[in-house]
Amino acid sequence: MRLRGLGGIGEALADRNFRIFSIGSVTSWFSFFVQVVAVSWTAWELTHSTTWLATIALLDIAPNVLLVPLGSVLADRYDRFRIEIIAYVVALLQALALAVLAYADALTIWPLAILVTLHGAIHSFSVPAAYGLLPRFVARERLASAIAVNSAYTQAAILVGPALAGWVILHFGSAVAFAINAAGYAVFLISAAFLRTPADYRQPPRSDRSVIGDFVDGTRYIFGHHGISTLLVLMLLGDVLAVSLFHMLPAFSTGRLGLGIEGMTTILAVYGAGATLAALWLAHGGSARISSTLVLRAYVIYACAIGALVLMGNLWLAAGAALLWGIAGQIRSTGTIALLQTSIPDAQRGRVMGTEFLLSRIAGGIGTYLVGAAAERHGLQVPMLIAVGVCVVAWSVAYAKRKRIGAAFQPRPDTSPAGS
Image (tube, rainbow, N blue to C red; front, side, top):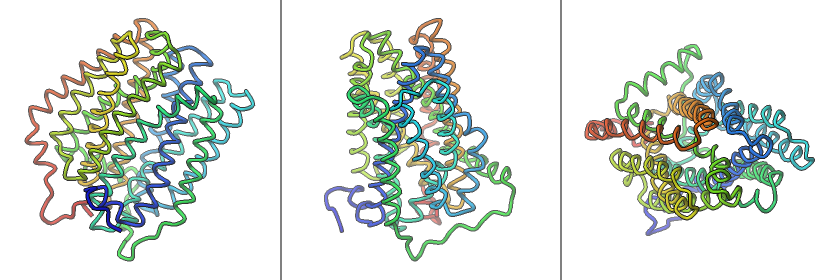
């Protein structure tokens, strides 16, 4: 199968396994973020407290601090696919528990907090394993294109999923949103049964070092690579912005716009539309379209768009800023992940991407809690604008070194595009 005229999209979709993998992956990612928004909105409805919004976000992240190092090392030592299947079965049960409690009107803040903590623990194992699935199933000559396309549609799901969540919650309630997530995991598990491992795939050799030693190796690799370390710092600061605003949207829509769930749904829908356009543009160009300079330019637009959004008191002006946020945010996130993925040796993929995930979660969690706590006293605008200012300062330092950063991502002649 060859889809001409689609660039990198056609190259990736020419692979049978990637087509099957995409069905389950896209569905589960969309449904995953439907649940994330439903959790945030449920916490707001139960408490009407920005501190509780931040606390729920932090509880989802806290298990990562303890378990992601273990999950990352296990992903490099054992069968990543098997780890992913086990984690998704447990995640399906967690989503069903939320749906049943919400349907029975028995979901109070404490059961919600417990199930959110379990959610964080599950994905401490699933996320590091997920980063190694494409090298396991996609033909080596198509891997670079598959990584770029996968990054694009995954990030589109991250951004479009919340927009779908707002519509579902508005029309059907949170119980249906939680049930949709359970169905998404079921689709992934069914599609996974049809995947076939290529004959030339070789499981990376297991390390004989300790779990801590292996995780330290992954961290050392990140900070020893000038391009990765710089983009990672920017990504972490950007995640503080995105995650904070994402979890504070119920409060922003209610307090600043005076619209409640309708305003949040509109902002997320426009935000998702911008992200989808950017995702299609990136996916069509494949890995050749993505560069560190493109990521850096998108980053500053992204930060300024979020700053503009929190200043708006009008829905349509806020939606305009959300559109720009979605486009630039998609390029920033997908570009960074694609550059990381194509620069990492397969034997270290779980540890390096697990470290990235852990640091991202910690930054987002701490940032969200600080913004939420400050918003109780000073409103949402002041802490968010301070965070935007920090991002712009960090970007200016990185942009001055853009040539050195770009050189760090140039492929070496003795390595494959995927670094494996």
